[in-house]
Image 1 (cartoon, one colour):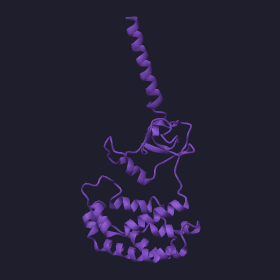
Image 2 (cartoon, rainbow, N blue to C red):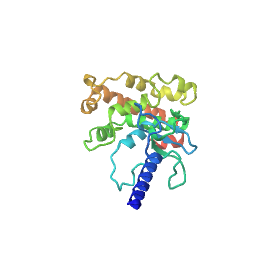
Image 3 (spheres, rainbow, N blue to C red):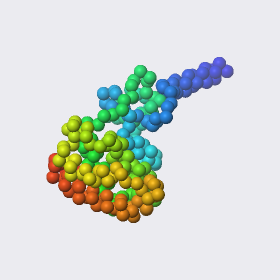
Image 4 (cartoon, rainbow, N blue to C red):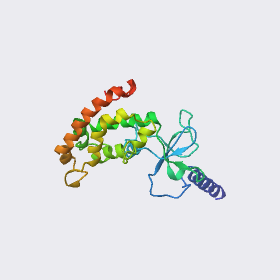
Length: 230
């Protein structure tokens, strides 16, 4: 009887220890996305939109593309590095979670890629209308948010020209398209009626103008940036 109690006590201690070490919340839940990212230097940041979409995807248990989720802030992956996705509630209270500020190279890469997506009607049809699509990025709302919200272009390009992210010549190439895109309203103001949007003459005209604008922008890009358009 004493031995049995000792074994049970030991198991309880192990279970409680594992829970405290790997699962107990270290900070209160809030309304923000449940995951964050730990960088190699130990800093913790909010996720970018494409990372949130990735974590929202459904994966089979044996899928090699499944995201690696850390259980502890200090735990390391197979490569011996600390970086990786982790639940927000598993970040110690004394560690600040900051909003990422895109560096110019990353900003421009994302900028070019989303302009590419916004100016390709066939690609929009293939992705937005795909009933088997599980990635929330492939939608009118996400395309627009990726351009205006993620790139912080709601107020236009003025500050990005001032900071050197975009040249005046580059902006002039796409300014008319950008202005029309910012003013666009889907039929019946329904952002989720993809068929209606893709058949809307106003949207088709914006996409076509975008193609022309992209051709005007291309000569101003460097070799790496032009390669993104292939």
